[in-house]
Amino acid sequence: MSGIFGVASNKDCAEILLYGTDYHSHLGTEYGGISVLGDDFARQIHNISQSQFKSKFFENCKHMKGDKGIGVISAFEEQPIYLNSKHGPFCLVTNGFIENAKELADELMRKGISFSEVSKGNINQSELTAKLINQGEDLVNGIEKMFDVIDGSCSLLLLNKDGIYAARDKCGYTPLVVGQREDAFAITSETSAFLNTEFKIIKYLEPGEVVLVNKNGVEQRKHGGKINQICAFLWIYTGFPASSYEGINAETVREKCGRFLAKQDKDIKVDVVSGVPDSGTAHAIGYSMESGKPFRRTLVKYTPGYGRSYTPPSQQRRDLVAKMKLLAIKEIIEGNKIIVCDDSIVRGTQFKNFTVKKLWDAGAREIHIRPACPPLMFPCKFNYSTRSIHELVTRRAIRSLEGCDLENVSEYIDSGSEKYEKMIDWITKDLDVTTLRYQTVEDMVKAIGVPREKLCLYCWTGKCPGAGKNREE
Image (tube, rainbow, N blue to C red):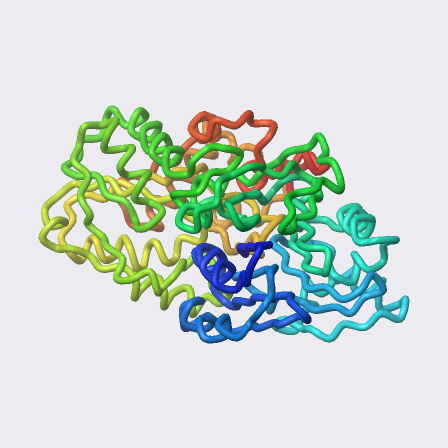
């Protein structure tokens, strides 16, 4: 997943752009980039896999002059892209995942269009987006045409002489929000970027909506559509606690998730409630409030510099982050029966080797794992996360139980079925924990507070009705 931020100001915007973009550091792990437009474009891209965004860009921003700019912290590819197009020069940042990128790139290359940016051997999807937009009669028409041909999702900010064109993905999987302060307008993926930069929210973009943001204000250039399928995982894990999506704060949703987990645990007797930091902490606080059991920090994260073990692209890197960032506190763990809340269990390998093992080694008496979402059954189709279905711990369990991979896993999705129970038993033994109970889809949706039909639940259910693809894989 990536985070994008743009600002149009009455004065030089580079400092606002630096800090606004930096507030998306929880979303990306590989690259950071900014572009400022004054008399001409100034653009910088740096690898931030081993350093923080601010430390890479602080000096750059002192020398970048202009009244409008865009920034990105990217999970995978180098951005912003610069294109000297038939519509004039522009820079572009994107957030999303284009599932049919190769097919679209091949089609453009057959038309004689070349690609210069390559990310780890693949077409840079932001460059692909830019060149798809360039096929339109104008920029807005190009964005519409791009939306029509891609499978997956793409929200974007496009910087040119007019200002910043902001377009939210046509099904609304990822958010974009406009803010205003006395001297500037801004647009962001994360509303937490507005809190300390003094912007007030004035508009949540609708799915498929396109607006032009400049120092004079916000002009709608394309109305939004009727489909809304915002990613539910924003509230559960990927979003920042201080951010709101569709007007609903992430931290409060996580506390509600923890409360629902506690309500199904009337038969469990424990001494303390703990969360895997950072995103598991609020779930554990909610569990503690509902159960009356004390919240204590059995695990702490050393510094924010290690980032998320879920997002780095290589297994080796994920394992290193998972091992190094968490420290167990023996004095709190030893001899206790512990509830451990986390946002999710994806592959299970890090959780087993670098979380559960640390708790056992520190003398835990019992370990009861409570993920705040249902079992993940499908790789995300709409953003960078797990790309292979075989990575998921649920699929390893099913393969072991069935002796083969299954096309239809509906019985394993049904939390009331016998096969679901067998899958959970297998994962419990594999993780080496006392008990394991997942959140139900129904309780997760209640905790979020958005109607089920307006949420993307694909990674749990295999269904994405908003995209016209109501299917199980």
